[in-house]
Length: 68
Image (cartoon, rainbow, N blue to C red; front, side, top):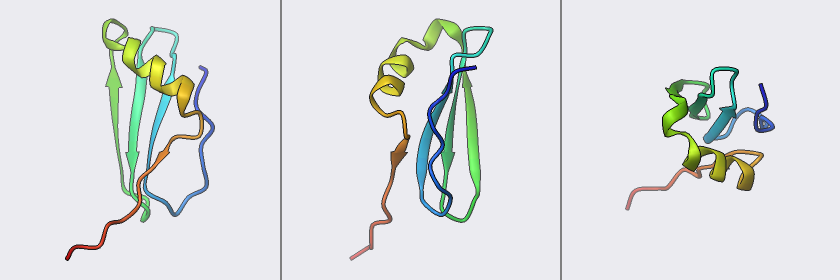
């Protein structure tokens, strides 16, 4: 399975893993403390994920925003 390069721990991030052998992708949302949610996206719904995966091979880091 091809995948994005996983960044270091301790940061909020969104990663796209795939293309799996069945044509699907996994999208993982992980917060800095290690808690995560992974969603499997079926092959029929993946063109957008492939587009973004090619443009963010190290994932997308999401900074904490202080509330005012």
